[in-house]
Length: 223
Image 1 (cartoon, one colour):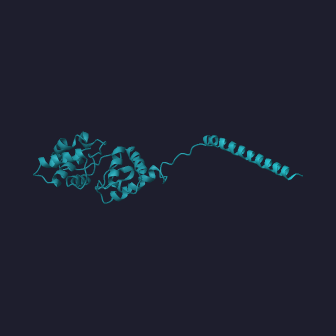
Image 2: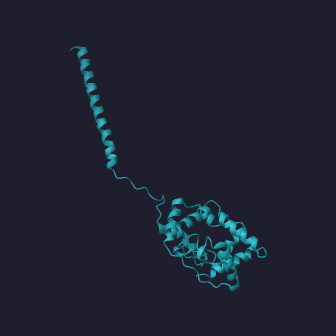
Image 3: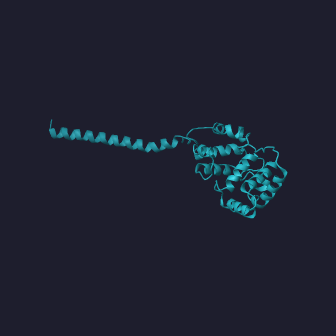
C-alpha cells in the first residue's frame, strides 16, 4: 500500500475524532448553563453559627433575666427595647464608645447579624417596670429635671421605649448610669450632651451625684 495514502487516511481519522470531541464539548458547554439554571439556589445561612433566637438570648439571661426582665438592681431590663436602640447600644459597647467592664467584652463576641437577631428577639417581649419605693422630695426634684432636660427625647415621663425606657428601671442602675454620663465616663450624643451641660450649668449648687439620684428616684416612682 502506498505510504502517502496510509498517512492521509490516518490524518483523516484523527481530524474526524477531533471534530467529534469538539462537538461533544460544545454540547456539554451549552447544557451547563441550563443545568445551573435548573438547580435550586441554596439559601445563605443567616448566621455562621446557626444559633437560634433562644440560644443567643440564653447567654444574656444570667444577668438580664428570662426574656430580658431583670431581677437585680444593677442590671437594666432589656425586654421591649426598640431594635434600633438595642443595636445602637451594642455597637457602642463594641466600639468602647459606651463604657462597661462587662458588656464591653461581651458585645465584642457577637457578629452584627447576631446582634440584629437578639434585637428582634427582645423587641417581641413587653417591658415590665419594677415596682419600687422612691423618696418623695427627690422624686419631685427629679420630675422637674426630667421635664426641663430629658422629656424631649425620653417622652411620656421616661416610659417611651424608642430611646430606651427609664421609668420602671432599677433605681441603683439608673443612678450609676446617669452619674456616668454626668461625669463624662460615657460619650452621649450631641443632643444629650447639650441637655446635660445645660442642667449642670443651671444647678451649680447640686452635685452630679445629687442630680443623678433625683432623676433615679423620679424614674423609679413611675410605673
